[in-house]
Image 1 (cartoon, rainbow, N blue to C red):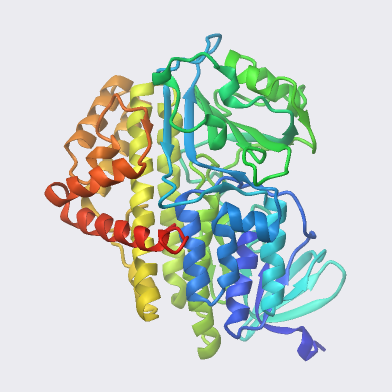
Image 2 (cartoon, rainbow, N blue to C red):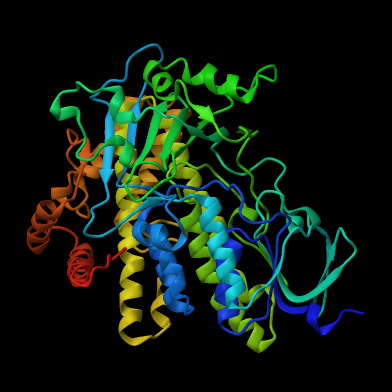
Length: 552
């Protein structure tokens, strides 16, 4: 007989960032939540680099579900003060292209500097962040159940029974699986596609190290025109090469941190870089990075402080992510690649979309799959969008002009999507009406970064078509690049002063003078919807800045 104390409205399997954020949102709004995890906090987790959308999604969850504590995660200063001095700063997304046996060409670099007026990004030390959000969920009323492994989940007409390997049993009206790749529900219902439906293929290896050489110290004598507006090591560094990339995510790159560590890793296409079973992970990493002199120099002499992790193919997909009384959340459903740092942003969106539906379902006692169909459709579409942009990135890595164009499609699509989401939050902050958030779900191009703009959809689809044609051998990389650049240069929705449509611009740094020029340009040129959005966002950014806050 299951006691009342063992009965819950919602059971969440997986107490990482996604599961704990969802649990906190539900519990704060009167839902009885069981928060389950097979491990215990604190612990290592991947997903350390944020994008502006990550912060906005967390601000939306905080406002919508009365979780002001969650905004701690949105600034480096608040993280350092409230959680601990273990976080790095992230002032940019930086990319440096490499060729085997050659020094890095200073002409083949990109950097997008996230403006301080709008955003304060950071590198997340995940063991501390995840523990903070987990403890917040418990403070909000979730019942924690750590070191508890799910043996089986049985569903019936009134709910689900969760059976533990220890023989204990719990009951819930709905089950959210936020566990990740080894999803108990995906296994139970045989949801994984035998062959992932995605184009992209990659494997990865990673660890934390001490003693990294700072990226800028690799080239102390570069000409001024090749030195970025902010140091490489103050952001997320991507070393790109043919069908692969290596990362450098510093936790020691700000005076606010006392963490001496750096996250390093490598993600490569196994069709080009197959795993050698005779090599250790360290040897595999050294074998590949050693082919590129300046990548090798950055990693020389580091000391790993934890075990290396090595994966087989990262990508997995699911035939279905929602059913009667259950949902696979985010990485329990699928995964693409850490390139472009979509993971936590997508998780935040998924939590936001699922939480209000679950709160209503608990009140109505109706947990049918139909009520959650938007989650199903959006998650599948979102993973496919991520697959297309990452596949484009890997394809273009070895062709710099092509890469510059793909880079611009990603940066501006994701940035405008962030402005769009922030506009919904601004409206909610004025009148508290939840329909502003529901309106954000209505974009006709489901899964796109910018889901309600026909021009951007056309640009993105043009990029995908040219990538596919190049991979099929129908056109050359130069032809694919030129076709995409033609679309970029003809588009009226890029803010011209930023430099998106100027091929010679490698470092985009929208500091206050550039933002001022953009405001003047918008008054006379460009897409009317973009003009309206950016001018409103600019005014909101200035208003918040006067109170010491950031729009993102």
